[in-house]
Image (tube, rainbow, N blue to C red; front, side, top):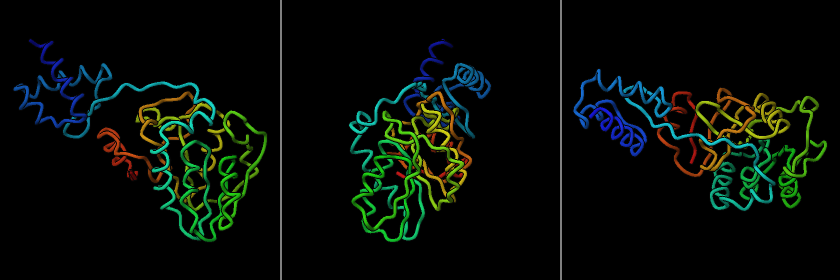
Length: 251
């Protein structure tokens, strides 16, 4: 029956993550016209996205309105965050001027920068500044303002700090193919957006839990992003999406 075939096909696509059209034609023994009709239905329902020669399953995106205090966020996905921080640190070179964002993942890159020389680290994050107190090999510049106690950061008028960065390491609450990069704080979002515009290379630093999350504040699309640094290979949907935009995935 038509309904049973469509149900089985959708479950198959979900299981595989991404499937070529030829594979679906062979498995379900249907014509190309029938396949196109079925895929059109799935796409209208928001279940799949069509790519060249095939389809990818669209996992339902979760919405998030608050990330909670930084003390709580530091307790989740700790191993993954350390790994991502180590990957991010490997991109920093002697003589760089870098921006390190706020967030429970990105500041951990400082743990792996003890042997670098003549590196200037600019940030508005208390965790970053606290780490820099014990790292005499790095020069730290704090862009200060009114403290946000929940986030452990300063509210900054970025127009007062027209710094240029070799590299910027930016955190995010959510990564989405449809909504791009989002967070839950307008002040933080404004800072991220400004820094991306001032950087030669901007990297998004996020563990795997940030994929398919959407927060209410859109702070950037992917046009200014060089790479995504994460702890595991994203789904084929994201791999294809970033490849089409010439964004590197580092994991």
